[in-house]
Image (cartoon, rainbow, N blue to C red):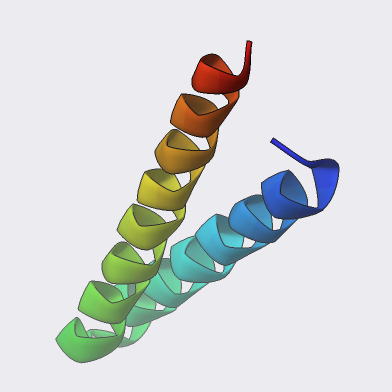
Length: 57
């Protein structure tokens, strides 16, 4: 996994966490759900990158 991909995934997860927390604080369920989706997408991308790395080695 390249460092750039790792940082991009971490940034996406952080952005999702901020959206989720903002949604919690403002009682905006749509924003909260969007944040959770962003975090899940970042986790899946990270898992895919790790799988690619495993096959390279």
